[in-house]
Image (tube, rainbow, N blue to C red; front, side, top):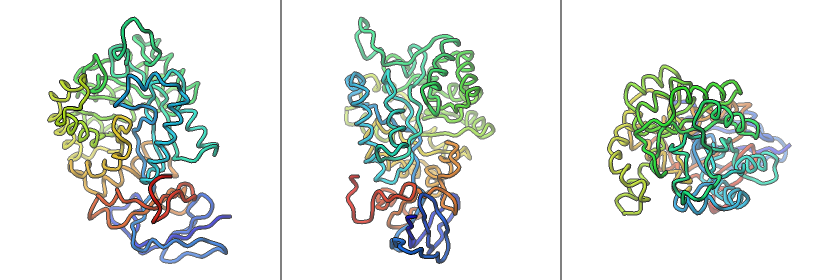
Length: 409
């Protein structure tokens, strides 16, 4: 039995409003065995001094795209599934060095199943990397955000989109995702900013189509994540049983009240907005996104402030893949900048994210829980920016990065 004792200066346990410590944590095999002022030292236990650091549960990013590259999306979608999976593994391992031990991947633009293969390889121990929870494809209406055919000449029939336009076809796609191993269903019920030929301010599913999708998913025991922009799109997703609203770009107070009443989680991807604003000002935003983002950017920022001021359940998600993964850790700072308290931002990436993903063994530090543990210098409740300085990463009791090591894994 492998044993590690962590000597912690301060501890954020994932659920409390304040830090505790000093504290010791005993990890045996893949779980936390005990926590307290002092813990036993089993024979041969490794002792790691983190007395000048804050220790936290591993971070959870609930919205990434390991096999999508927004900067080169039209070209990159034509690469082989194997190429995408290998690049995705490299991205996942590099991102883990920032403290992200669990990722939810919300769709690949690929006719095959590269993120399923990647998840399975990690779970089987064939390769090392963060835990991955997968929605393999993005189910969309024609002319919706998941319809990527507009990137290509209409003469070409390329299998890069997962689209349907009637309830029966929608149900068939949901069932297909279940058969081949998706954990979640991902859909889009409004247009988006980076996709051609659609508008985030417009709803793209009819109510009977949305109802068909969510009822089929729920019957199969699959939670539903909905990319949504327009305020009415947010409300439609809530009415028909979405578990999470992704982006919720233009959500209003009525939509937030509905989300709170229904227990729906919001994943506001605030750093993505900062990336888009920078690209807009630098003139590097993709042409199909410029007019939409110019029109909506102030409304998006206002909606993010409404989210922060509300009591809605906010989960950490970035949309990395649509911008560089190394910027994903900045979501903490973007959330606090929008008005969330530092502790609420930390909970968004720990206990709230784990609750949303229905992963009861993750997101908190407590005896019996899985030992996903990270450490960072400083106090994140005083300066949220220290979250970008994580230098110890443990997943399931195995140490992937130690203080003093370079970030590359």
